[in-house]
Picture 1 (cartoon, one colour):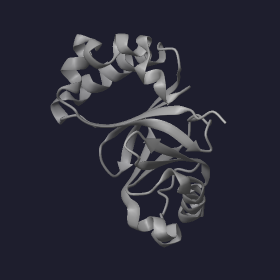
Picture 2: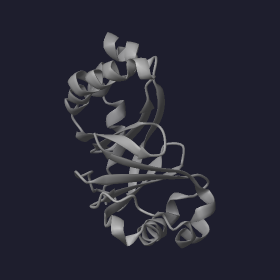
Picture 3: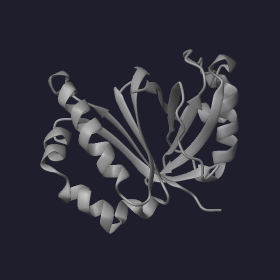
Length: 191
């Protein structure tokens, strides 16, 4: 089975740059990324619980899209002057890799998105982790789909799309042995 790639970016602009940051993202950056062959989605979110304030999720046909010539033309050292100016002043957490569970879903519009990060887990536990997460999220939040993403460093991320707008109560005990590896819990709303 083919595994989609992903690029998940969490960002915290300084208050004085926030208006320009959002203008840059909405008018230049998203369109530029969606213009690269292999980028399937590009969605933005704002944090309602946790930190950093902004999240962007990009689904890719494959992880290696980030090494394509088309991406290199707009990324890395070839970024636009506006991109270089804005990103030089923004705190960024960047995660890229591939989706292991279920493997080929893409991000849909949803009322909320919960991002969990687990350190020290191996990808072979991803299916069990996804089941545990769905049990651990309060039933009021109505999980639509949970995907397990493997960052290039080996860290596991869970990206759960929620149908409801209620802040889900995460029952950490329902995560069982996975709870000790949990080191980030953020809840986002569509931007």
